Length: 286
Image (spheres, rainbow, N blue to C red):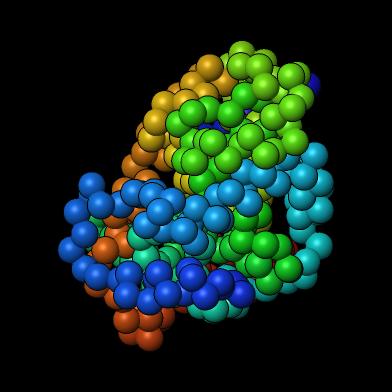
């Protein structure tokens, strides 16, 4: 049964082939056209990531992970403890950066800050990838990062590497391969089970601390087939249409800041200590 949408408020073990690929990947001055270019021949590590992701992200798998992690029983950590852990992670799904995760978080948040956006949005930029601490709990990267997509209904051809879904067991279940599958027309994105990863997890972890606009950015920033390619609009509610501009506003900061200069984490840390304390307690449940 559909639920009521919330109301708006004002590595770790990286394969050698992937390590070789990202070794010289960082450079400044990339044009927007150079981002999110997925080529299986040129980027075999990324292609292999999506092969696994598309094969194993089944409806059954996602439901099990939601049950496990939405209970928030993995202990308490501060925002900085989560961020510092991520310095050990290189994202196998991302062809655009080899920065540490905390450097990418600060690139994103500093770009938002430079444009004069509210403090809650700056903080959203900083925490948006912290759900990648799922790797700390032993989850493979294909269950943590990468573009997200709905499970339980037909796969869109607008998802990156859609051909890899042929190996997913759900592809052989006709009831899960119709336009609506287990969902209803205009049921709302909050009723979808998206492929499991850091978006859903961080959106849940932060649910009591950040405004709904921020949570919407956290939950859906990797749902590229939807917010960039226009797929799955038949599942959107009126509430989603109202909130959609927030995801569109956030996305360029997440994506196009990756070619910017590396931030000085030490110099910026006092600002972020103050910002985090404004919204989050010293430790939160994960």
